Image (cartoon, rainbow, N blue to C red; front, side, top):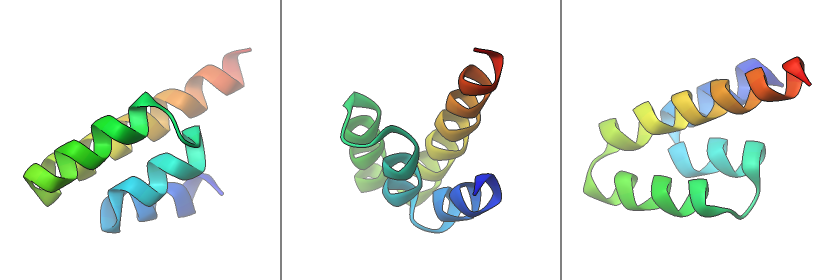
Length: 59
């Protein structure tokens, strides 16, 4: 699932973030960044997905 989320985070950034966080502030930030440009949205999505997965594995 991790690889699928990262791939979706690159191709369709809001979908990847939604799969990790659900409807949250991270999703709204990502939608805003994606509207500004695909690259900022993708960077934020990959960062948010990996951060969320690190937090869940450490707990």
